[in-house]
Length: 485
Image 1 (tube, rainbow, N blue to C red):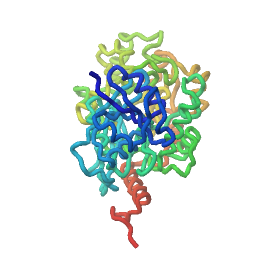
Image 2 (spheres, helix red, strand yellow):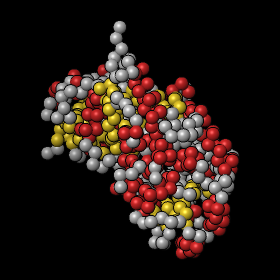
Image 3 (cartoon, rainbow, N blue to C red):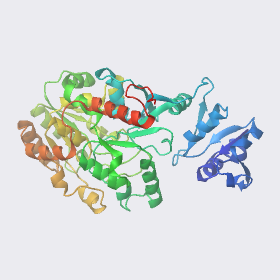
Image 4 (cartoon, helix red, strand yellow):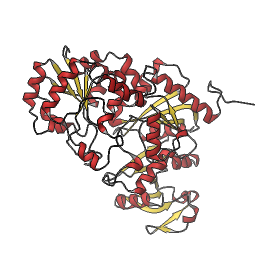
């Protein structure tokens, strides 16, 4: 016999949960904070106010709302300790068990900071860098790292920390996991991109105006957004419809690794080999998700998928010129060029390899002599290293046609030669590795536009700004105590 359940959320998400799990649960009622809905029917079931939940003591409570953190806060205050949360992912909806039975105290700790880290890209995020470099700076703040999307996630632990933290720090947009009020929300983001986002997305990208408006409302929840430059502030303000007063200039915490890591040694450790060659990193932009959802450009538009590419011939070129090539694609796209990794001087790098060694991705970046990319924000960070760059935008015309590039002309904003064929690529690789001053002036110009801060100190600056924001938000005295009198 199916377990009885009440759905908290008499709305679109609640209806979706009802339709998705009607064979798994015996739904007997809906609950909603909108008092006007109490006493009505929704999906043919009675709607009760939260006070009415006491009538359904033996039923599971399934929270189906983007306000699930606020609802859990409400329910824990009413004495409830177990819930189910409906995660309404397109095509892959899920229900998570949230058991808070081992905790009694859910009071907010004002100096506790949750660092939200994306599991799928956990080794390259700014939040991970803040925690991993914890000994490089002093702070009174208590950091807790949460890898969202971790298949082994303990959802009780997740919600306990989200409930009791005074501040949540994000490195990506998290619709439905960003509290509406009562907590300090700080967005430190993950890269200065030249691609369009938010309101600026074209009709070629399947996002409705309503969805864009939801994204705007999400971004408006952030009390402060950390940025790298005035240019990034203007860009993000326009993309998400935000006042520039929401922004603060800190730079990105992970960029400290560009200045003090022994990238060459760590790259050798990662590849399990001695490195005596010139090293090249190929890291193009993310295009397509594992669900086949197109984000930018044309899927598979990699230089090593071009018509004139031959893996054996290109590997011979690398051997003859004493060059080692590392390829780092998005995890969902790596298999698209997997056929070339059998060659002796071509290696794949992925998050799992880096994580196994306990490294942050940025710890290896100063070990490269050359970067090859297209539109990826990685090049804006490499500008701090003054590393020569080559750009291989095979789908540039499509990006332009669909108005997916915010910064035009592209040729100005990318400080390096642009190639369309493997022959051109080989020529520019030799030029770039032979002369570090190749396109140096162009790199300096773009670096000064995209970065206010160009020296080590990104973590320190980020933490000091966090402390300042926390003190102002909670009325603290700079030492973590409350201001009195």
